[in-house]
Image 1 (cartoon, rainbow, N blue to C red):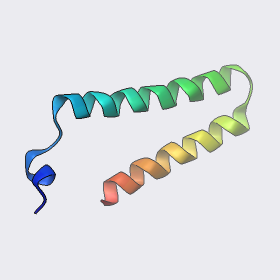
Image 2 (image 1 turned 120 degrees about the vertical axis):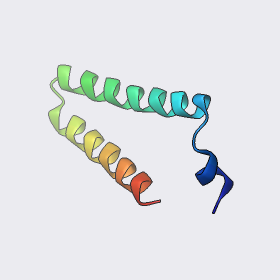
Image 3 (image 1 turned 90 degrees about the vertical axis):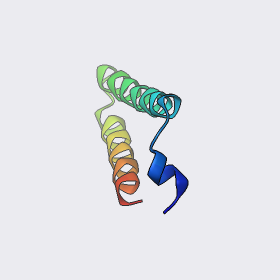
Image 4 (image 1 turned 180 degrees about the vertical axis):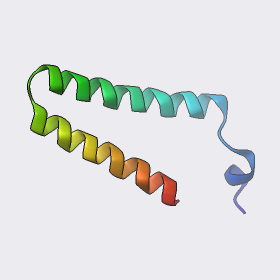
Length: 57
């Protein structure tokens, strides 16, 4: 078993992860408010794919 698997995430790693997610959703929000629905949907698909990949690792 890898060390990081047994230790989990540090507080800073968790906060960095959350910051990245917040930036993604702020970008989606911007696209939607700018009436760029197709671009927002593409961004959402990328976010979902990244999350799913992380869940498989």
